Image (tube, rainbow, N blue to C red; front, top):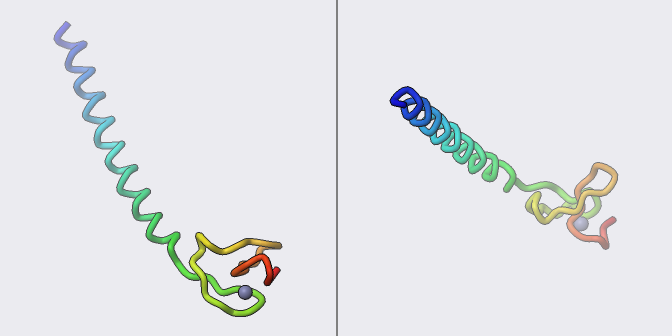
Amino acid sequence: MIKFILTLLILYIVYIIFFRKQKSSSSKSNEDIESLVECANCGTFISINEAIISNGKYYCSTKCI
Ligand SMILES: [Zn+2]
């Protein structure tokens, strides 16, 4: 019974460590995503989240496509 509790405790600690590492790495990648890209048509810099991707190129709006 003690071995069973110890196993559960170890699994719980491993899970917490793994979850914390995943959380910190995902927040780092979120910072990288917020980089600027240049519109292939007019040259305006827009954040990659707002950019429209068409034929592998970034555009600031549907008018530029
Ligand atoms: Zn544009």
